[in-house]
Amino acid sequence: MVSHLHEKLGPTRQQDMERLMSPLRPLDPAFPIQRQIAIDAAPVVLVNVFTLDKSDEPTFLEVWRDDAEFMKRQPGFISTQLHRAIGESPTYLNYAVWESTAAFRAAFSHPEFVAKLSAYPSSAAATPHLFQKVAVPGVCVV
Image (cartoon, rainbow, N blue to C red; front, side, top):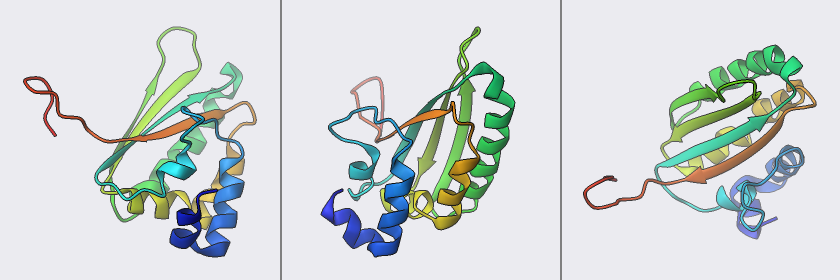
C-alpha cells in the first residue's frame, strides 16, 4: 500500500480501502487503482470493466444502479454511463467523470460505498482504472 494513501485516508479509511481492493483486478498490475487514487489529478475518468456470469446480470444491474445513485450524490461527481458488450458477452464497461482524484478517492473509500460492495454477485469481477484526457493536435482537445 502506498504510504501517501495512508496520509490521505487515515488509518480507519485505509483499512476500509484494503478490504475494498481485495476483489478488484488491476488493469495494470504495476499501477493498480490504490496507487492511482493516491495521486492528485484533475479531472479524471474512471473506466471500470466488469465481467460476470450471464445468470447474474439482473442482480449486477440492480447493485450497480444503487452504487451509481450513491456516487451521484458525492461531491466532485460529474457523470457516469454504463455500457454492455454486444452479443452474448456478459461484460460491462462503466465510465465516470470526476472533478479530481481527491473527490473520487473520498467517494470510493466512503464506508457506505465499501459496505455496498458485498451485494455484487460473487461472479462479478471489476477492473477499475483512472485516466485523464490527452491532447492530440487536430483530433482531441483537453
